[in-house]
Length: 139
Image (cartoon, rainbow, N blue to C red; front, side, top):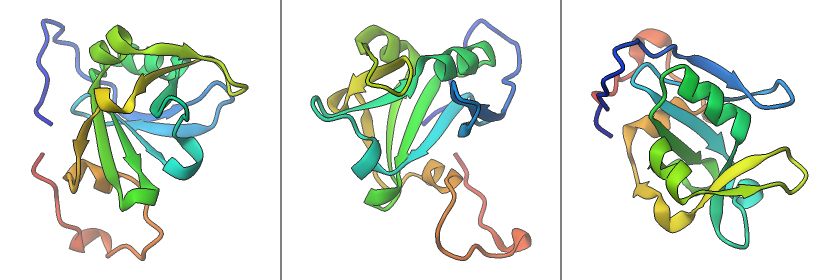
């Protein structure tokens, strides 16, 4: 994922974001990508096969300068799916299935970024190296 430049020169307000119930469910990175880590077996919409995100989460992320969404499937060895927020709005659909108002996009609208370093933003069930020993991602 390349940095996205817009005419808006305001810096991205990076940090954790909460859903409609106040639970931290995603992180907005400094590069403007909203990263949401999920367990696909439980969280992927079926049918149609799609990823969905709380509307309030997307609105807050956009207010804070986000331009993209990366969904990391922890059940698929941290497989990363990416979509711009503009495409999410353009091709997305509203979903309300008991978890608050959400916007979703079919799986084929996402870029499949297998092995992308952004997936490392998600917590792991594996022991992590000490802070000084971690490899830094270049993009």
